Amino acid sequence: MRRRFLSSMSGLAALALAGTSPLAQAQAQAQAWPAKPMLLIVPYAAGGPSDAIARMLAKKVGTQLGQPVIVDNRAGAGGTIGVAAMVKAAPDGYTFAFTGPGPLAGMPTLMKMPYAQTDYEYVTLAARVPSVIVVGSGSGISSLSDLIGKAKAAPGKLNYGSAGNGTTPHIGAELLKLEAGVDITHVPYKGAAPAVTALLGGEVQVAMVDVTPVLQHVRAGKLKALAVASASRATQLPDVPTTREAGLPGVQMDTNYGFIAPKGVAPDVLKKMREAVATALQSDEIKDQFSKQGAVAVGSSPQEYAKLMAAEYDKWHAVVSRAKITLD
Image 1 (tube, rainbow, N blue to C red):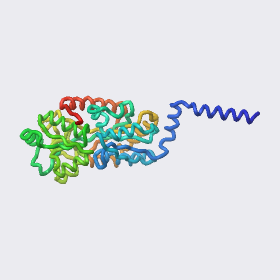
Image 2 (spheres, one colour):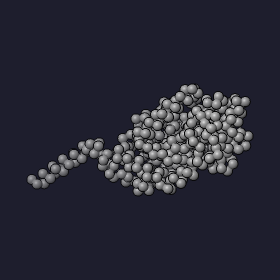
Image 3 (cartoon, one colour):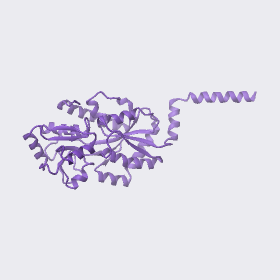
Image 4 (spheres, helix red, strand yellow):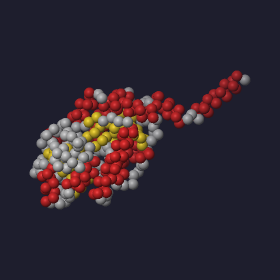
């Protein structure tokens, strides 16, 4: 009789466990997390600004959480390929993405997306990187006004390189064209690193990119920085004027990078990841590395991140509409 009673109780316990609520399951998941390495998808080419910053943070966040964070570059389609891969991942807290605004705010203004905003969670912002307008050192262009003058004298003859359609370097350069009233031909590449390589090789004459991948080349004299498209000068390039100082105050295009996760990850897991990123950003090591790369640490709440991306979408949509940008 006692054995039958215990057997019945075991069966009831199994049924109770099987019927555990999603909230209880999420809480159990959060308590055990992280129990294995995590994947951080970077939807851009290796060697670019997002990749460099992601790898710095991945190492530090992994140390904070006690498990490795493995960076996986999945470039293409303006970052949407990588983000699409992330949203399809299991929402178990072991896959995140580190992305700029392109796949979240830029590409949605240009194409039908392979995912919806409701398919991912904003975790936290992590870094802001000023954009800088650069030309080859042998271009004969010495200032922003000089670039505008040459572009007006020969419409469509100058080429600018970007990290791909719908990326910050693309939309930023189109904003520059609108504000300056010039015609410069767009040449898209699969990431910022290939675009900078093309600029160094003379395939294109100008680019408006994050300061991170061009800083060493500017310091070495291989590239010439004409203006910083930010509200203030870049600490690493104190002698380079802002676009406002150079006469184009409407050209502002910082790149904000942050962590996102598949929809459905347990709130406590997202909180732990956000806290780990915040702690990493406060470390002297990250501050020093960011300073060398031209990045500024920027933490945030998920709500602040979402609000910023909504504002970015409105800004980018206006540029796309005014410039009549298409993916053709």
